[in-house]
Image 1: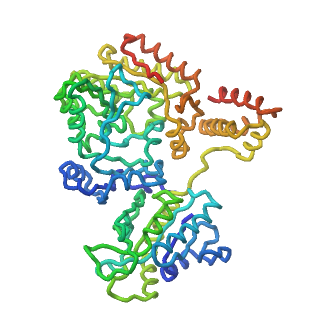
Image 2: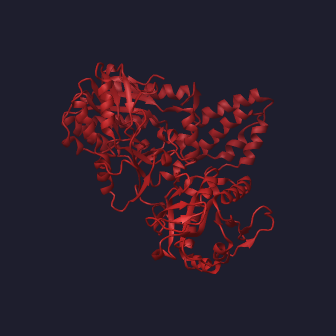
Image 3: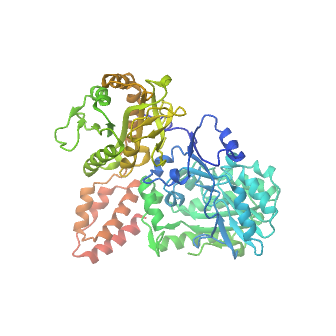
Length: 338
Length: 269
């Protein structure tokens, strides 16, 4: 039998480009990075991304890239399942849909039928709408929820665009969340106190078992350390916490390892919360990823949200909270309330 | 299994020979040919999108009622019109457009197939002029739309061989010879698709035994679903499911069954 690599095309071997976007500089730049890719012209990204009956699990083996113009809503209210860090006007925006990383527990696998990646090339339209929105109020905007913008930056170059745009909008704060090792970006950006780089931090055990293709804990910590050194605001997100055998030991080791690389006082804040997901998303994830122990865990469902049984959830969260409070002030620890 | 579909018998002849297929007399609805192991099947779907859609839907309904639909991959092998220079060449189709409605469909291009790719127009009647080096057939849209009601887009493949440029008359013998000339490419695709379908069982669970235990414990449908999830998780974590199932006692009613289920969940997770 052939190995996966022999069977599947390489990622981005096929690029679907929406008519009307093909001549834009952004599209031309992106296509030029994939010289061997087959470029297929499409009328509307939805004809590819929202096709019926897609096998998200199989597509994960070789994601296609879709370049399109987002003509729909560009900014959304933040979900109550996400941490707003006490920001009143909490929004999120997706200039990219889907992620090159392959975390087994990721809600994107339940939210989208497709594993392919959509890059919206009309980022200036996003900026115009956000400028309008934050004209008379402070806005807190998460821009890297439905993707990992830093991981995909070599394709899009969007991190600098977001950072530069935010620097010029005094009412805007953005969070860019990542699991990437990349440090070089911090040399190309100017620190801004309203741009927060948020690292999702997990124990090595969780990363190696469930966060496929992501950077190791050490690499993430080195990247975060570099960002802090260069004067950027850094947040750590212990979210989602994943239950596994000997989790206490794994989370304790993780906290010790963080201490080796980071002075906890240098962190802007941290968030924490155990894994939770909407019942509908989990249904699709279980179907598409039958091999995943994380997805197949027998969760409890509370008001449409699947979560660990209360005794596990409480124990895990209390345990991590206690570990964290040894290193930092309680006020800087944000627990997800759901 | 691989399900070939060809519009005309003359396109199917080389495949019937290559895979040693026999007419399936039990199928009274369709002209179907199958191999000994039930791993390859072929149906003749007729010319035109509507007929093709009806026959593909009919065959997939029959197959899916017998098998899990995840085991099926449909491959359309047939001729198409294209420019003269490309006559005899085989192509993999990455986009199909209905020439009447201009709506397009996209089979997933996941696998390393060593065949050049094209976009294809499906027309309702034969074309007489080739525009802009395009390719034309008369069935692909029907096959895709019908198949996609049952199968994911990565399980729908189109292999088209250029036979004419719309101006010439071609014979059925000529069509057979074109498919024959490209049989090695078709074989390669077929073997690659077979590899993608060789999947090991996911959960090490005797589901008959599982059902017996559910009856013994007086589980409701909802309790059974919850129990199934626990068993799947335990199996993925390498626990001995047979031992777990054997240890569960018989209960007098579903109330006792629920107590055992709750206890088991605590123990497993």
